[in-house]
Image 1 (cartoon, helix red, strand yellow):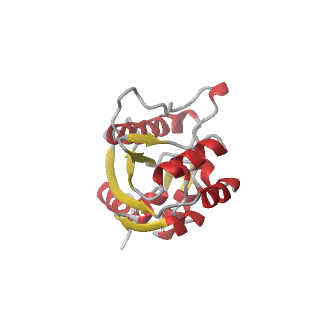
Image 2: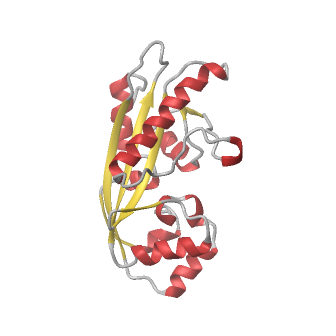
Image 3: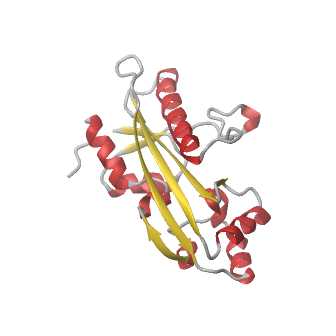
Length: 205
């Protein structure tokens, strides 16, 4: 058993796909209550450094709160997915207008999706953290304003890095993918399985 320090149902689904049982370890995300992990990029921070920093911070914080919540000790898995184009990070859009602006940036072009996975343990027993990552290139077809408006009228863009879900309606926008489909979803299964095997916490084929 492991904890998954993520609210993403997609990541839980992907872990189930490879037969890995996980329990959710939810981190606070509401600024009014105080963020457990601040996801604001640092000025000039490269996407690779940003994704690694957040994945490590989520896994590390998750491992420290298990005792405070009187939970059974188990490894904590965390991940962070970053979409970049022209060297700029496209986060999760907060509004319909922002989601539409992201899609206009991505339309007809290739962008990068990087997902870093981190695994933390009981700090008193095993202080090191293990990491793995996948980097994919995704090319969108040209999109009309009508397509963008229809997509942004639904709920799909609003909790996704870059404002789209490859496993949803946005699959119809993607001309080419080089890399990991599950990594673009938010949890690269090959790299995650390798990490769990390396840590000795999973019995995977």
